[in-house]
Length: 376
Ligand code: NAD
Image 1 (cartoon, rainbow, N blue to C red):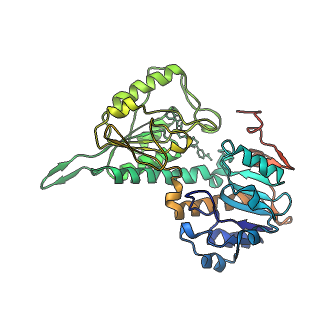
Image 2: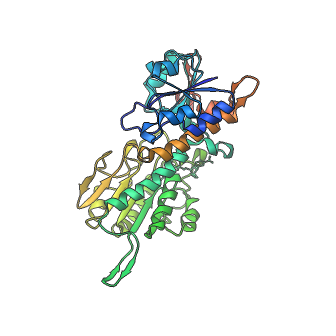
Image 3: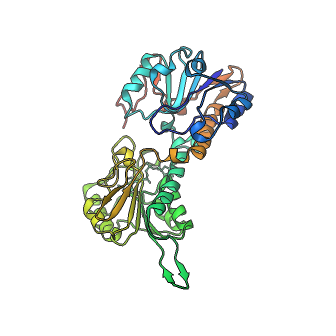
């Protein structure tokens, strides 16, 4: 089996889908690995490190030629895959809803595209889950970046010249990124509170030493849908949530928003009126900015100043931690392919549960139920 690793071409993407560690492990399984020249540069991995691990280094066309499996962080242009074997696999983060035309082109090119973000949220797939590994780092980086943009300190400090009070940090959306944001803000000494629509997060918030802020007035809400993800909430709930958030947010110094709903635009959680109620110098980091944003007025990769409040968000937060993000992403891909490695066939053979969850295209067609509109 020949595995190709391409240099990422998307704007600002510094991650890479393999590391010397995973190259060695793939070779130990019996694969050959080819890595495009400069693929690791953004993640501080030299070509020499890849070749010492046993990879062949070459230009894109050479690397892809006769590949059985192409690995990517994001999906390459379909043209970049020409020369790969018929029916070659592409395993990457493929952003299937937003990149539907590209998915169609993969199908037309006879590529079997595997969307790593569709990995089911089941225990045995946890180590293969790129959303978790990347969100975790993103939650950390959001707090670091907000702390840097904030003109005050996070911890309470008692000095000879007087006391500095602790920053108040409010985390909205307590999934993987939100939990790491809470933990990071706590480590920096902030006073942290957090909210989510899934009531199961209340205990998790408390166990990290933060205060849960929850809508209690609307009964019968759970907010947890398929696969442990959030569902869209009723109008009544959204109204109650907006009121609760309004009174709380006015007292916060830092707000980190992380709320996502799979396959939909990010829910709007912070309005311009709420921003105007915050103290000047406050900072909001919108981790959902690339999915439409949780915060009114947020713009990807820009610092927007509204009412004296800085609103920040990156289009691609994990790329700002490219070395660690690549190491975890590469392990996710290795854990995925190696778990299904069939020694006799000398290649991975997916089972139905995970195969059907991630496979977008096969035999020249789009085959995924979520893309064909068969399921939500
Ligand atoms: P996500 O990135 O889809 O969303 C982030 C958070 O925003 C979620 O907690 C969500 O409930 C919340 N949210 C959505 N709408 C909101 C609103 N209007 N107001 C406030 N919050 C809102 O979530 P995620 O980080 O992918 O995690 C989702 C769940 O999946 C979690 O329970 C997580 O522990 C679980 N998970 C399981 C596995 C596994 O078992 N393999 C792997 C990863 C995550």
